Structure formats: structure tokens, C-alpha cells
Length: 288
Image (cartoon, rainbow, N blue to C red; front, side, top):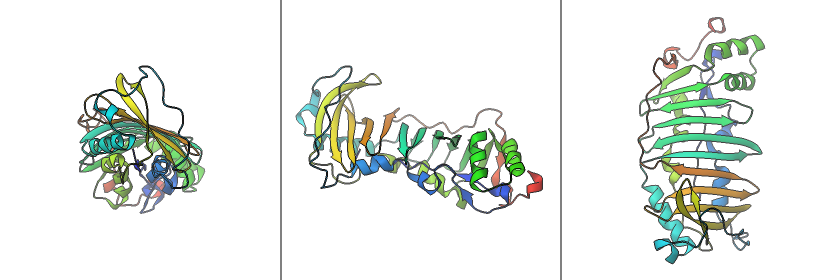
């Protein structure tokens, strides 16, 4: 997974504060790229390219690579895996990352039409559920999320609590064409998530085989700037990346699965939905 960007930003609105712009309290402007650790680790730097790779990955089913991958170099395996990932029409992505020491987790199913469904958690800032189709975006923050939003906007305590009461665990809707929805497009961009970007590092080294979710995968280890990354490539069927881990100054883990599974963008039955496009960009505090 070379220079793979995992664009994760959580869009929210400050319309209830009488503002006309959206904000992303989950990590602020940095939330649009919580996969920065993975991206940096895959961009191999000359200064660290000769670093000693970590011990070969071990685990259940450990052994030398089997099948066609056993006859390829580490760089060739990554090249093959990148091409396979580039052609994926949809996939589930589960990640645990650290951004500036703060844990970030997300679980999303996405497709190349821009649809996605799942949830994002940012340490100490709550959870946001998200459903995005080609036309609409629905998102639902919990109480902690909206309190974090209010704190970020320096809202008075009473107004903040009123906002939490009104919006916590409630679906909000806006059209994809809304300017405030631009951040969400990065979150649901499968192209960025599966784009290998550039040529694999020629020093990539094959490790051993492990079992990931019942599937055999061959580890490919790459020395990179400020750490190393290990990609686990499926040895049977299509050469998908099943897992990628980053270690060193920044750490993270990304799991890929459910390749080709359609994204269900239907709202839960009986969902309570607030249409943000009908708020006119401003809601007086009195109406909160």
C-alpha cells in the first residue's frame, strides 16, 4: 500500500450557531487525512531506504509464500497488489490510526461511485455515523461529538447543551451538491483509499505467510521514512491487500475486506431526519 491516502474527515454544521460554514471537529483540518501515517510510511525516503527491515511477520499458517507470488520479488508483489486494489469497485475498510498521539478509528464500506456507510470515532470527541449516496449525505453524531463541536465553536454552555439535546443521535441530511458537504467527499473517496501511487520500493522484502480473517496472505515489508510498513497480500485468488500496518514514529493498522460488496445507503427504518438544506444556513439560537 504505497502512498495510500485514507481520507477521513467528518463533516458537521454550525448552522445552529447562526454560521454559514461547516466545521470538522474531529481533528480539525487534519481530519481529512488520518491516514497520513500510512502515506508517509509508504513514501520510501532515500535516507531510510537502507534501514534494516523488521523481523518477518509470523502467525497462524506461517510459512514461505505459496503460489505465483512466491516467484515474484517484493516490489513485483506490491505492484500486482496495487493494480488489483485500483480495480476494486467497493470494499470495507476498518482502520485504527494515531494522529499526533490521538487514536482514530473508522469502519466504512465504500464504492467508486462515492457512496459509503459506516462510522468514525476520534478519541475524546465522540462518534459519527455516516451514510452517503450519490445525491445525499446523512450523518449522526452522538452527544460527545456535538459537545466537541460546541466547544470548538466556543458556544455558551446553555446553547451547547441545547444543541446536544436537539441533535445528539439524530440523523442530519444535506445534498451532496451543498458546498458544506465538500469535506465528506474526501471521506468517501475509495479512489484515494486504494490508490497505490508511484512505483513500489525496489527494496521491498518478502516476509512469511499469515492468516488474516481466514485467508492466507504474504507479508511484504518496506523500509520507509520514520518507520516501516508491512502489507499483507492475498496469496489465493485476486492479489488484494488484506491488511497494512505501519510501525515506527507513527503507527496504524488498516484492514480491507468485502471486496465487491454493494454499499447499502438506505436509512434505518423510522429514522428521525433533520434536513439541513431547509434551514437556510442560519438558525436563531432561540429556536434551538
